[in-house]
Image (cartoon, rainbow, N blue to C red; front, top):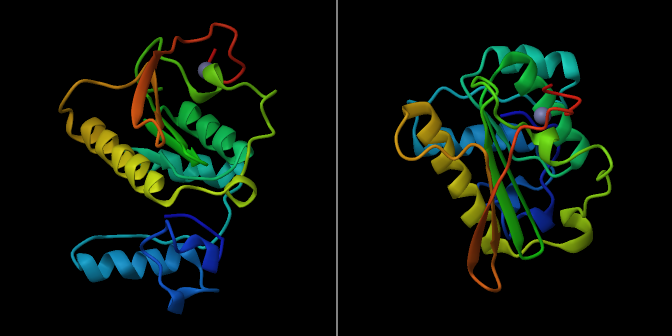
Length: 190
Ligand SMILES: [Zn+2]
């Protein structure tokens, strides 16, 4: 778990590992402690820093899978570059307002799309949670779906979800799925 950010009161409605007593503390360290309380047998490394490209690649090399739970576009692109460079599976999820999306990327498999095949450098001005807010249950729906997809990749069960982008709107309650192809012009994976 890597995050240099500290817990803010406005995080508590959706970031359910944190409590009022944690405000001002580092997110990665508090989450590590909370998860250890749930299961003391787990091995969790908390990294209380923002990762640069070199460190991302180093950690991606040591990982079986990456879960991108970040809240900004430059980080998502950097995490994707590290996943592609090290051929590490990546489960990317995002939620803002009433809308969430999730996609599984498999740079370890041939001819599969990466995050940059879908979202190019032009779309840098994404709406942040701070600006638009987040419907609190949405983060649970998207986050647990992301966890399910990660467990599917790690254990090899179920229908593979790579090559698709799934979106969910909490107001309509509808999921939609879009096919996504590898972009032969992609600056990251081609
Ligand atoms: Zn690509």
